[in-house]
Length: 76
Image (tube, rainbow, N blue to C red):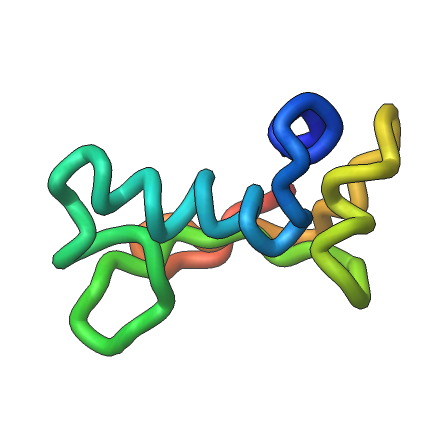
């Protein structure tokens, strides 16, 4: 995501969409993955941030506080 923002001028929001919703669509899996919606598989990360830029800009820092895979909590 950092490279997408720095090298290609994407906003943090665009980069985040590119690795989630748009990636699922590109792989032909947009009907079941890529967004948080009823009926879709619940795979997502929980970040301790207030803005997507915090995920992209803080190299060497991982504000990851949790993971959910197939709707179940996992250790981060």
